[in-house]
Length: 119
Image (tube, rainbow, N blue to C red; front, side, top):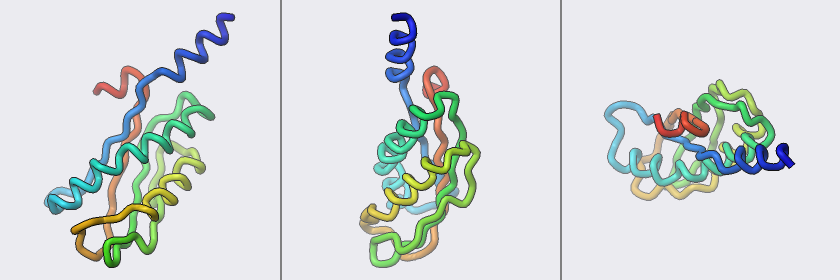
């Protein structure tokens, strides 16, 4: 019974993802990063179930053309869970980047769990 309680508590821990966009990024880029952070939390939640100790950051680089990502790639990963970076690549490929200029962008997403999430 104790084991089940611990598992339930682990599933209730707050998870967070914050997007770090380069200094001087346009308002549209900053808004898009904030809007899509919840998708990254979903990806991290799946990875966290497999490895509860997981924390760190994943840097995503993607090309935007006519408001859609034409190529996305996890270019740096300190979390170390391949399914997380694959999930992030799939999700960023589906996003609609309204009012975002065509170009190549790099965002770092930082992931935290539990009391770390409030820092």
